[in-house]
Amino acid sequence: MTLFHKIIQREIPADIVYEDEHLIAFRDIAPQAPVHVLFVPKATYATLNDVPADAPEIVGRLAVAAAAYARAQGFAEDGYRIVMNCNGDGGQTVFQIHLHLLAGAPLGRFGTPDGARPAQL
Ligand code: 5GP
Image (cartoon, rainbow, N blue to C red; front, side):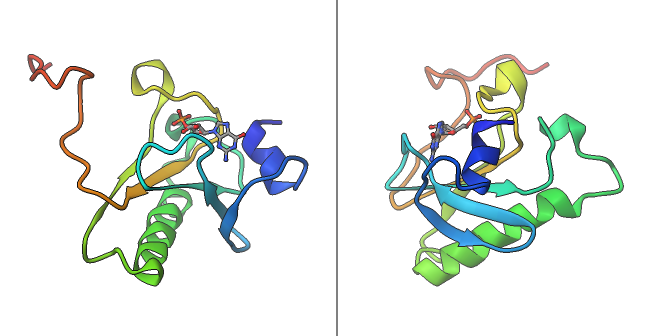
C-alpha cells in the first residue's frame, strides 16, 4: 500500500481539501508554490503508464477536480499549473498516480533544472 492509500484510508493524517467517490485531494507536505494540492484517484495505478486506454476518466477527473478547486478558491482566473510526474526522469517519488495543482504566484517557466533549452529528441 502506498503512502497515498494510507491517506485515503485515514491511516496517516493529511490536510484534505476535497474528496468524492473517485478521488481525494490534500495539501502537499512540501509545497513548491503558495498553493500545492495533490489530486489522487482512489483506483490504484502506479504510474500514468498503467492507466488503461479505455479509462481516460481516471486522469480526466483529476484535472476537472483541480479546475473546480481553483474556481472555488478564487484563483482560476489568475491561473495555475497542473503536473503529473512519471517514473525516474519525470521525478515521480510516490507510485500511486497523482496530479499536482500549483498556484498562488507567477510560476515561471519549467523544464530542465537550470532552465537551459535542451536539444529536442
Ligand atoms: P511526485 O514526486 O511523486 O510527483 O510527488 C509526490 C509528492 O508527495 C511530493 O510533492 C511530496 O512532497 C508529497 N508527499 C510525500 N510524502 C507526503 C506526505 O506524507 N503527505 C503529503 N501530504 N504529501 C507528501
